[in-house]
Image 1 (tube, one colour):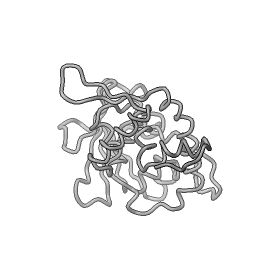
Image 2 (cartoon, helix red, strand yellow):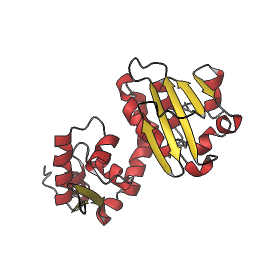
Image 3 (tube, helix red, strand yellow):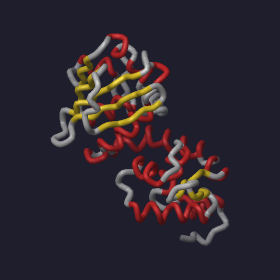
Length: 231
């Protein structure tokens, strides 16, 4: 796609304006390097289109593709030009928090994506002991309503099947409410008070939940509609 213009914004959009390109860059900057890791962070992106977009980003110098040593397949790494997009993506995120989230549809509250973000938000150094098991019971999900996150030292893993371990803390909550908690649209205190969230476990985990399960980095972004509640 060419805008046939020497304007630097137009030239940048020729590289970055394709659907998914910036989100793929965000995945790479978030630490994903293998194809399945990138796809897990973008669950509605088809493998064929991801392959096409990665090839395009490689051609434009934002991605370096390297064969995995001793294995089949490749890894993908952000180049310096891609790393310089970090502040750009952050500012787009700030704008989105302020002005675009009023357009949220029910289908946007994706359970698979939520679990990816929750897994990445766990802070193992803020938990007590070598292992912590967290169970989510999603009250508005018909199939696969129960999920586990197992934290072993610094290793965090999401499980759809019961890992057979003693659970330390339970989250009984709807998907939309959990998304709102992670995004900072709703405080844990208010969700519990209004009966939207039931936490079961030791007080030390419940009272410090936002220290070991970090909210979105943009959660504190001021918004024009003042919908955030930090009670």
